[in-house]
Each structure stands twice: as structure tokens, then as C-alpha cells.
Image (cartoon, rainbow, N blue to C red; front, side, top):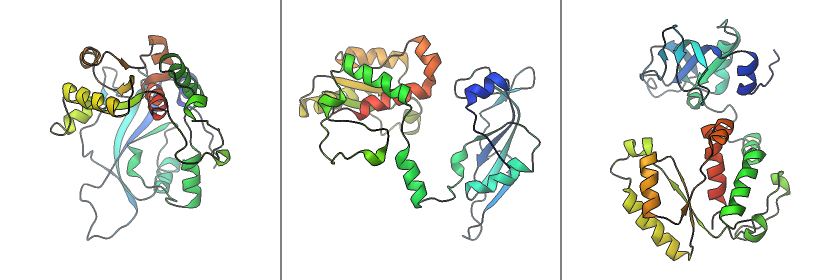
Length: 264
């Protein structure tokens, strides 16, 4: 049966804000039986608390990648153990839903993990060009960083990139990914305070003789303001409201990552 690819933004415009069925994928509560592996899939009670709740109209609300108008009509949990192909019968035969969302799809394994096509596909994946352009313009404007000066020339076709390892210089700045929010909640004893983080950042700037630092972070507003006071020379990509609406959180994260990846 033939299936076409449709970006969610296009679907939400043509198909409306409703997703007929949301399947939350999870492991089996009992784990492997007697240490033997078998591929299987079953509808089971949800192990963790659902991240979706019903509104007054009996629609499911939750996080749909920043699309606040999106709602689910049905939500259920599937315990899965096996490759991605085991979900096919469910999608093709066992549901009448015209639109299905798979949440926590990382619980499925790649059918051809480790094969030649798998690694070629992974190697060929690149960030969207319009996001790279935004990141490159920010580098040029605020960090005095260009591909020519930094020796970070790029080719859309990775098979045509002939750059020798170790020849890239990187931009004249330090790139820092400062994780906060949920990472702190899960690693309270391992994550330094902002003061501790700034101390380490300054140490690295001195070590590499850099005067600028670009920080990618999910810190809350209060922490960001404190960080600016502790580290006034820091630079951040702070999107306008229009940019945030256009690129969403995921796009902003990619721009951050692109800028960090070009640091010295």
C-alpha cells in the first residue's frame, strides 16, 4: 500500500488540528521473560503517567511540538519489543484511524541497525538549510565567525567533502551547552550551580585565549538574567517572537547547536 510523506504543518492546515489516535509506546512492565528475546506488541495499561489530559470537550491536550491548537481524539499505550516493522500491522489493519501519532517511538529498534544503508543515511542527514543560514548570519554578525576564516567549509553532499580531520580552526569563541531544567531535576548532585558553571567557563576561555562565549541553554528567564550578570561577555541567540513562532523550539535548538558546532 502506497503512503505519502506530509509535513505536520501542512497536515494541520489541510486535515485540521485533530489526531485520531495517539499511541504512546512503552516497554513491557515485566521485561524479558527468562532472558529470551521475541518481537511482540500489545495494547497494555500505561506504565507511566500520561502526558495528555482531557479538556472540557473530551479532547486530549498535551505537547504537540508547539502546535497549541492540536488535540488528540484517543490516547492508548502499546507495549513494544522489537523492530519498527512490528508496528505496521497495527497501523494498516488494526485501527480505523486516518491519522496516528506514535509517541516515544524510540522504544522501537531500527530494522536494519548497523547496516551500510543505515550508516549512509545517518551520515547524509543535515540540518535544514534555512536554519543553518540563520546560524551562519548570527556567527558573522555577533561572533566574527565565517566558514572561510574558520576553515569550516561545508558541502551539502557529504560524499564531496574532502576536508582533512584537524584542519578546521573554528570561530573565535567558546561554545557552551549549559543544560538546566529537567536535566537538573534528574542530576541534582552532579550539576554545578550557575556560579560554578561560570567559573569553569572562564577557566576554559583563559585556557583557549578566547574573549567571547556563545551559550546555548534551556535555563529559565531568572537564571538567564543572573548568567548575564555573572558573565557579561556571553552571547546568546535570542529569537524574536516571530522567529519563535516560525522555527519553534526545535528549530531554535538546531540554530543553537549549529553555532556551537562552529566554535573553536
